[in-house]
Length: 375
Ligand code: ADP
Ligand code: MG
Image (tube, rainbow, N blue to C red; front, side):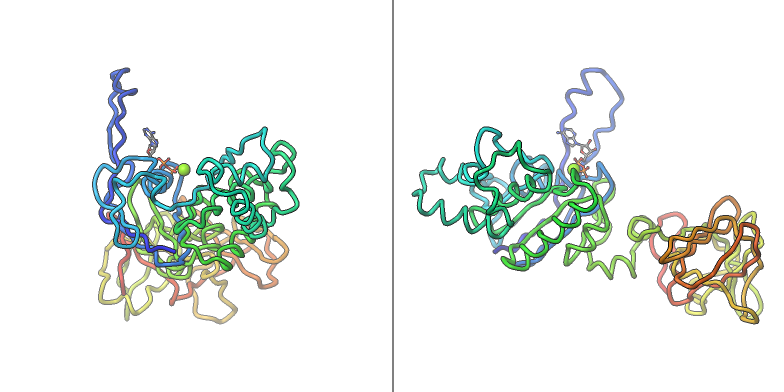
């Protein structure tokens, strides 16, 4: 078990290769000023688009990559200069890297044998992790005969053999297809529940992060954007990036001009007649003519009933019935405003509806910085 702490961690790769070709390469930081803490036994997800610095972060924690600046602690020990094997970390990457000629048992035993641990002790450890990751039936098989999901279970079991204080998983589910992915996600969750090992999973898949992690650290271009529980990052995104990254279908993010009207303000949109009231709680932070990004999730765009006070009549652009929910899009200037509903509503393109927003669930963002404007 371990507490992990990152303090102002930076990573810059030396792009010597690119310099050879005399290209103008902006040798920027792959990870910038990254600070966060994992509590003992906590399951943290690092989530972000490809290239945002997730694997680099994990590799620095594991000791596979030099830290350019900053400090990493496990408990009270600063581990910057500690050899990877002395960090008591278990690692499982997307690639299984199992030794093909060896059986699953021998793969799991490999590192312990290299350290001359008595065979009886090895056997106990192998059986323990095999039970934990449900690979007991596979111990006599060779990797070639295993499915992707089975290989990854063995891979994770191998990471757990030494009872690591910290388990690091880098995109362990990426190679797998739908059903297997969900199955292994469940196995990882169950495993963590059983052993409560401090765990970090790196993923670009928000569903994976949301379903597995106690807290999610969302990164973009090397920087931590927000860290919080799945509900916090969903309900209370700190900026446009997090707002747009979390949630499926994604949050509507529309450029809007605030217009003063009798008794309050309206959101108006370029190239569209649509106007919706600005919730009163924003009255003291907006002013006439101010430009903002309005964020509202598709579930919080509501179709106004007859007689209900509503905005502009607007034609349906796209209607999709997905069985358990329906998706409706309307055109707002050059953009689409999407809504989802579980109500039994049926439209054809061109049908006129009127919309209102769930006032409690509207978010305003600064048009320049993208930061949340609090009410
Ligand atoms: P992620 O795992 O989020 O997809 P990475 O941590 O792998 O992102 O990469 C972050 C950035 O660092 C990217 O711009 C990537 O091109 C760069 N990078 C990663 N590894 C190396 C390396 N060994 N040498 C140079 N640049 C690298
Ligand atoms: Mg990666």
